[in-house]
Length: 147
Image (tube, rainbow, N blue to C red):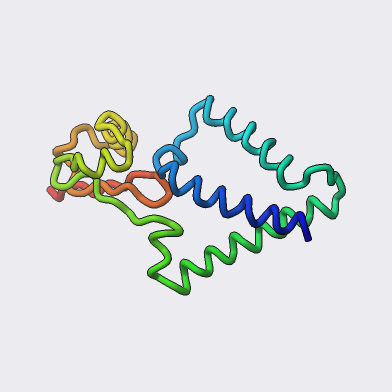
């Protein structure tokens, strides 16, 4: 039971941490980010299982994480007002070819990152964009101007 309680506490901390970190940081992993994730995983594992190296302990941790993830997903589905808190909301960052600076600052996103994503989607200049939306998963969706 102790493992389940520790796992639940770590799950909540990780959920809050990922919401505070921001979408853009989580969507693009640089080599250093990968190293931090590995170190974080090791630190979390030690906090979860402590000296319990049994298969049962590992299964309890995995099962608890899975149940909590399904529960959070269900909460977002069942209670639409909870969805922005749990998952975030899409944010418009370009409108009619103009960057929305306030939203870029809020998401710690640079114009160069928007331009890079645009180029990856076949957009050579911001003036071609009707809307650019930072999605909840950290990707940027582009809607081109017609014509």
